[in-house]
Structure formats: structure tokens, C-alpha cells
Length: 172
Image (cartoon, rainbow, N blue to C red; front, side, top):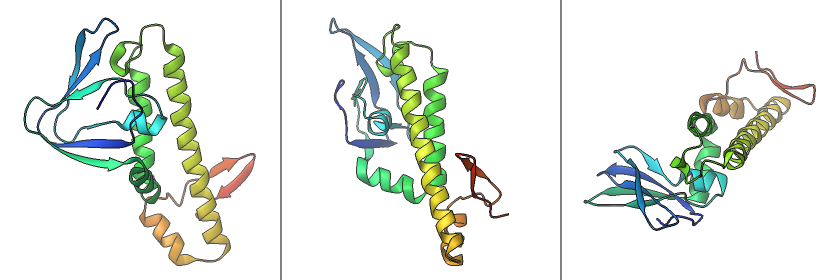
């Protein structure tokens, strides 16, 4: 995986310890992190459509699980509760780092961090809006089977979502 390219897949480390390496403008290498089993890389690039901020190098035998962007998006839509958790974790990860170069961002790049925060917040809002439309549609049509599926997938039936001063769903 090369630095500076937008990737279309996310990788999960199953076995081994790949390295995240940042390449400076002068060609110098900076080890950013060692990726442990069950960690991932590429998620920032595919979720936010930004260039990969580092390269990933394998120094020993590793086993990776690769999922393309469309399949990953489909998984997040199907399991929206987990998708929301993933987006919230990514947002928290980005906001807790100072403007150091962990994401390939230089010290003067607060704009880029704010843009990432905005993109992720947009994705979260979009997911909530789609969820509320699905719940409202199922409730309106009396589709108890669909409501049951939504609740099993993680919808909180006691949660109220307000959009433009309208209550979108309240199953309590």
C-alpha cells in the first residue's frame, strides 16, 4: 500500500506485525506504528476518500484479510449499529491525536483534521437519516418483520431522532 494514493480496500491483520511507515519529503522514513493482529489499515482512506497517509510494509510473514470498498460499505449498511461504532471510533481517533503527522498531516494542517471530522460526522448523520427512514417506512406500513430485523441489527427502539423539528421515529 503506497503513501499518497486513495485506496479502495481495507485490510485487517489476522497474523503477523506489519509496519506503518511515513515517508518525508526528503525521503526519510518514520515508523508510525506496528500493527498488531486484529488491527486494520486503509479505513481512513476508504471512509474519507483521502490519500493513504503512510505506507504499510511487511517484514515477516503476515496474513491479511482484504475487503474492497463497496463490500465494506455494504457491511456497514447492513450492520449499521456496528458501522456507527466504527465511524465514532474513527472520529474519536482523529480528534484525540494532536496535529502530529500520524495521519500524514503536518503541524499546520488543522484544516485537514477538521475536514476529516466533518466528513465522518456527515457519514454518521447520513446513516442516522437512512435508519430513521427505514424505521418510519416499516412502522407506517405495519411491517413488523422489518421492524424486528432493524431492532435485531441494533436499532434502539427507545431512541428519538429529530430532524428539522420533526420526530422521525419513536417506537416506545
